[in-house]
Length: 281
Length: 184
Image 1: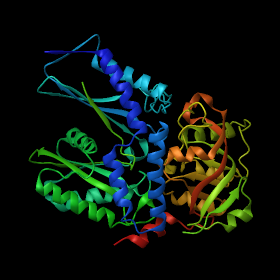
Image 2 (image 1 turned 90 degrees about the horizontal axis):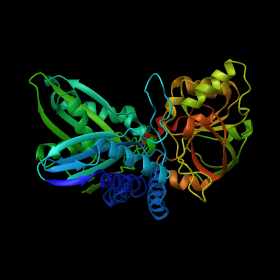
Image 3 (image 1 turned 60 degrees about the vertical axis):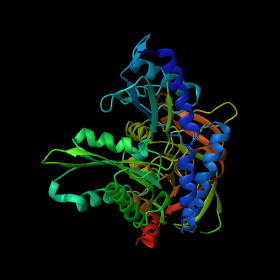
Image 4 (image 1 turned 30 degrees about the horizontal axis):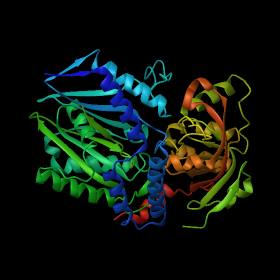
C-alpha cells in the first residue's frame, strides 16, 4: 500500500493546468507541422503558419495558446494499492484547478447551473473527473482542458446494427461536415464505438487523449481511422473552415463490445490546440 | 490570397462596399467585445429603454472572452469564439447600427440576410491563435456588465489586427465557396 497525501495531488494538478494551457505537446506540434506541408490552399497555408507561430510564442512566453482554457477534464488512473490521505481526491483536484487557473492567468469558464443560474463560478471549478481503478500503486493524472467551440460540435448516435460500417462512417463524416469551421479545424476527431450510451461518449473523449496519429492497435480499426481521415479531408472544409486540404489532423477510434441490439457511435471533436498533460505520482 | 488591406474603425459604408469575401484586412481602432451573455443583456437593456454602454453605430463587435492580462499585457490571450451562438441576437444589433463582427465559423441565413439589408461585414480571426492575437491589443477596459467576468463588454484599442473577410455585405460567403474548391 502506497500513501499519497492530497497536498501532492493539489501541487501536481496546479502545475498540469499551466503546462497544458501554455505548452502544446510536441507530438501535436509535429503533426501540425507535417500537415502544414500538405496544405494547398493559400489561406490554409497562412493559417497553419499562424498556428505554428502561436504554439511557439505561447511556450516561450508562458501564455495560454487559446483564450478558452477549457473545462478542466481529468482522467485519473488510480492504482488499487494507493491510499489517499489528508482529504478527498475530488477536493484535491478542484483545489489544484482553482490555484492553477488563478496563478496562470487562465480563463475561468464554468457557470454554476446550466439552465437556472449561468453565473461564473469564478475559479473554473468544478473539474470534470473520470476515475478508473487499475492494478498497481501508481496514481496517474491526465488533464485534457476542453474548449467549448469544439466540444459543442460533438454528436452521439444510437445506430441500428443494420446500419453497420457504412452507417458509422457516414455519421462520423457528417458530424465533421455539420461542424464546418466552428470547432477550429484542423481538428482531432475522437470516435467511440460500442458499449452503452455513456460508455461510447467516454470512449470518444478518451480517444482524444491518445498520442496524436498513433493508430488503433486493432488493424481493422486502424484501417477505419485511415479511411475516415481521408474522407474527412476530402470534404474540403480545410483550416478554419474556409477551404483547404487538411480538415483533420487525425482520427482516433476507441471501441467496446456492444449489446445485441445496439451500435452506439459518439464523436468528440478537438481543435488543433489539442492540449493534454499528464503526471504519475 | 490578396495583400492585406488596412482599415480603421468606425467602419464607413464606403469601406464596407470595398470589402469582398476572401480579402485579408488589418484592423486598427476601437472594437468592442461581446459574447452571447452580453448580447442578451444589451438587447434587454435596449428593450427596457436604458442607455446602452456604447453607441453601436458604425462599430465592430469582437466575439471574444479573453484570458486575464498577465503583468505587462494589455489583455491576455484573446482569440475568437464561435459566432453562431450570437446568431439569435445579431439581426437586432445590426438594426441598431452595428457594421462589423469578428468571430469564427459559419452564420445562419437570417444573419446573412440582415447583413445585406443593413450593409455589414463579418470577419474571421484565427481560432486558437489567441496568444499572438493578443499582441494586436494595445489597451483594454471593461465598460459594462463587469459581473459577467470574461464575458463583460470591453473596449479594445487594436492595431493591425489581422482578419479575413469571410462574409461580405453582398452575402458572399467564404464558408460556402472556400470548401467547394477543395472538395473531392
